[in-house]
View 1 (cartoon, rainbow over the protein chains, first blue to last red):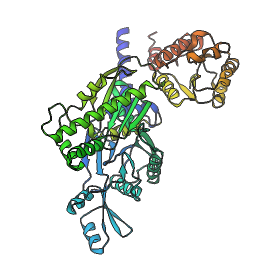
View 2: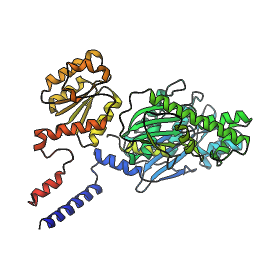
View 3: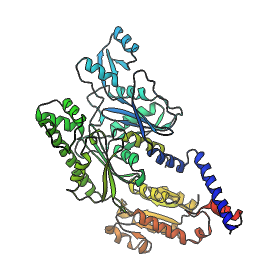
Length: 386
Length: 146
């Protein structure tokens, strides 16, 4: 008899639990966190912004990665994370009525400024190729470029190709920001404040997240968001040691993919653009280099990785902020510079040369290295209020 | 809200860690960065446990611990004190076993809080103890299983 009741009781409890799952109490702390953890398990479906494709009007939290080369916007969908990206670049051509009509007819996104058409996003790449010139970037080394007077306007225009005002005024948008540099001058304060103002003016509530922490949020849900996230981008590498999603230590170095291209190019008398193409065309650091070009790329890749690990060692060893962590923690590498074969193994080898104050369980590459920051920003945005 | 654990920490990271780990362990937590900010909460809730983080406090602020003890006689105060600052707090604070030295050990703090809460007569009598399945208890009563 008692067993019968117990069984009924458990069934009732199960049904109540299911009911709770179906109708999460809006805004409740637990449901927000649960949804965020659930979102971190979803795969990313990424697309490049197409010509003429309308910008989205988000109806929930948004994650945005404003990187040196791309701007990517992530939104939570039923079975996946939807990510749309746009090239963070522009190209200018002289203003004329004829050109204006042509651009409009072809759905090219542009704005007019000081007698010039500023063509933005992927379209800029096409125009640059047509004129055998390079695109220009509104960002440099992970931050707003000091050399481009209309950098803010360009970024604003590029973001507007991806998202419009939100359906609900004040919707959360979480954007990635670099950590403090340990090897350069300047500050991220200006960059962060400008982006915040820009997103506020679009009707969002902006929340900043360190880029390294965004990697942790994207990849380490199963480890209770505890570990080291490293975003290896074009302009800089961002590092965050996170304990249950609290960014305990954050820093950045202003050396990353662009540095490898530039230094390897100088060493062998080739352009950085060519080195980048070779690097992205299937470089494998575990294979013996067959030419002096790949040799140069290997050398500067290894230098960057050693530099990064040395910085990690120096920063972690000199802080008293790290709490006692009961077990070893993982390291996740993300970003375009982490993609070539052998980066994980080279990082592991470099780690063996230092003694960190925390034990490392494993080194791994993010599931989708190019988009982990935007996904992590979305997850943070979804769990805001926690 | 049942009697919350109050965290008093001027440090953004340590305060955030303590708040998060205690929340995850099922406790209601209020985190304040200064004694002044926390005073209202002390009056309102008469907390069972206060975690007093002394990291970042000036030497002259050691007296805050004494003030806390006087204002909250029924509250257990866990003081987080660096070994080098321990003598400063020797004369002021609660019993030695509730002074936790560095580095910050969040799991140890949670286990201490859990011990304190579970040994409290008020909490023992209450159904709102963290981790207790109130739904199961209500249903058990309803079905007269107990």
